[in-house]
Image (cartoon, rainbow, N blue to C red; front, top):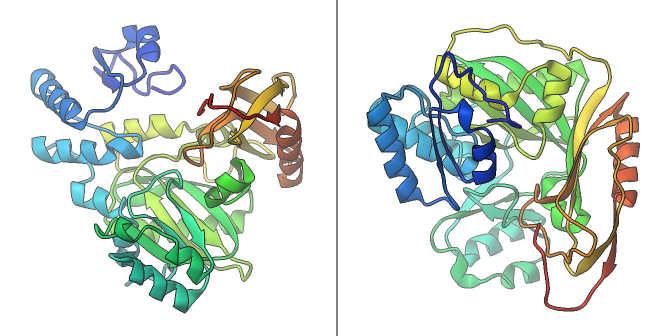
Length: 393
């Protein structure tokens, strides 16, 4: 499903849906062969149900579109001999240490890094590199990410938190962060869209907004495409939609950050569809099921200008006093509000935990940035509050 549209035509495919969106499933029940809706994800229950559906209905494709389920989908494919990326390929594209290890023998530059097994590992790494980034090896949405500048910050960390090897540290890389969504077919990149974050995802707890806009520099797009192709080959990834993040340094270097075997989230699908006519989620499901060897996708945008999205994040300890709708603004093509006047806010849980979300078109980067500033200043008014009632959005 994507915004109420079925990714595959029901006349050609019998689609079975497992979801936590009961309301959405009820609205679109006529489009599916079967629906199982849960209040929350229980891995054992969902695996058992998936196995039942596969064996009962002769299902031939299992696809995951979110980080939470891409590995489950791969394990089911392996269990039932279905085509698609193997668990090993998916695991190396989820573990932030393994993914950088995989690139060691390529020309792709990565930050210096190490897996953490004890607090002393972080102490030693910070002494060598100064400013460093600590994050879970299998994290998503910048959850748990910390930027550490001093030995005192490192020593203040919980000593017993790192014994399981589920954390890593890497050197801090200055520069912008680029986001690349690409479609690979038979190990060859057929489509590549590049965007730039308006603020680094790791700063979401400081800036309280996020988003990105499509990069229209053809030279930079081609450089990113070439790096993405080298990464696809290194990871032995065959078919599907992935997203890749790269640092773009002040010295014009491109440095690997991380990759995921799924479309990007947060709203990136809107500007990509607007400029290229491609729905990333639909294509991920479609090519994963059909597995064509090649397809023709646009190499350059089909429209002039740029497009992007911006999301406003909740400030903990603040109450919403006013909401200004921008739905009538000619450059705001989509608006989603998850708050109301009087909402008392907790902090964001991850970098796309938006209280207000906008899809924006613009003539160029400068106009896009002006609109972002306008939204940040005028969309939601807040005032501090004191009291226990908090709404996490």
